[in-house]
Length: 634
Image: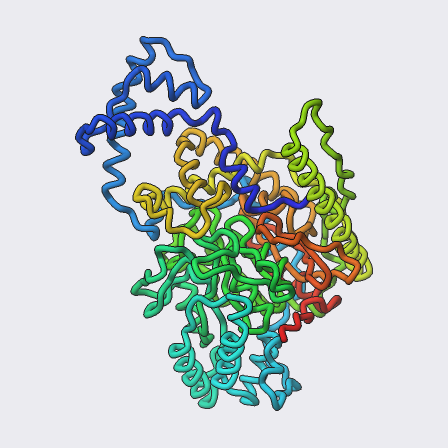
């Protein structure tokens, strides 16, 4: 069955807790006792043997002897004192840890093609060239769904102006936002000034490249000077920063025109933000998924030429799948995150969302590379220029994750217990109905995934079955929640987490509180397991240059942990015979489907082989044309 990202994140936040609660549980008990007694809060809380016993029961460790408890007390008091000393620093979200994560396997041979040249080079094309045959329609609104490359050709030839194009997209944003709820802030004044400047430069022959004059939108976790940066969260509606994010600066330098800051689920979870819920343009009764909710929805709705999203555990993949957009989640460390909200320093990635893989590559070509601030960025090359049209598909080694394409196991009903109340029976029958419906949807969608393999074979690709290494990827996900809880430590301690829109068991406030019980030892152990994952997943790319996978499933968790790049591309539209979606979109499943909604497929590549990945995805799109489909909004 497809893995639900929100539910998976919540479930995994408690992995290992029964054996790892001791430090946090003990500290909590001590603080509670301190507050109840009215003791001076500036002093470390007092630890008693009874507290150690209670914490040990919660943690599932011990029991400890009296002598052991006596030896532990002084050290535990010192630890608790250090907690308070660090908290007094009031660390802002922008402060990085003293370490930098780099997902390098011990054997780096799979990275050679991007770092030191390849022993099997594929043909490169020259840099982007405008299409002289591109024609401008009389009604600019007909360009709403055009690719960046097509728009760039028209702008370069001065067949259209950036100002007119920018105004057209701003008008569309205003027209469709009441239905889709994808805009937090329009940057109209800034955009019109940029567009006028772009037109003047292009007219004078100072052409900056294919993004010059192209309107785009930013996920509202990117700082833009002079405008709010809300992170989609209640309590942060008026937050602003005095400097642009690195990605914003680089797109400014490329001449791109920022027209809006788009929605994201509060603090980068889901599609619900402080102003409501962002909608899927193909079916506005459904959410757009998230957390790059507005970026994917606006691109799919033809309201911007491209957008920047971010992914920690599915936040580009999920909304691109739901909305039928193309996303390129880059290798970890390829794009600097300076000026972006930090959720997980070892998993956050910024990447483009657009209408084609080529468009994504044109954007990634501009935003990648070190900036001197984000210490996780690795100076890998992104040599865009692969000629997807002449790529020799037969020379590529292409694998597919066999498990993703196998028929799912039949749905099994729960045997009713011997004694069951009427309420319990209703709940069991409800679970069974939901399970059967989910299985039916999965069986229907599988035909689209199998069609990918057939299409690739028809393109001359020799497909090799591969298996994702069998490791406990879910048990490593608490790394994310632990880092997120640290990034928003003050939110939890101050009680401001109550301002967040969502307050359920699966949402950030509860996840942050739960993560405080995840001790340093277990965090390090999970990172050691992550090293094995990096090594073993990287080893797959000794057997294949590209791997085809379902957009959901365990690969999504695994490759976000290992930092491997992914291209998420549209793969068709469900027919009228598709199973109907649930009456209510709870946000717990990405592929709820329904007639007339898009499906996707994901391509994976070795670390820092992002350019080859984009070229392969572009070749697939040229052969299928699914990325040219768009929703009817009126």
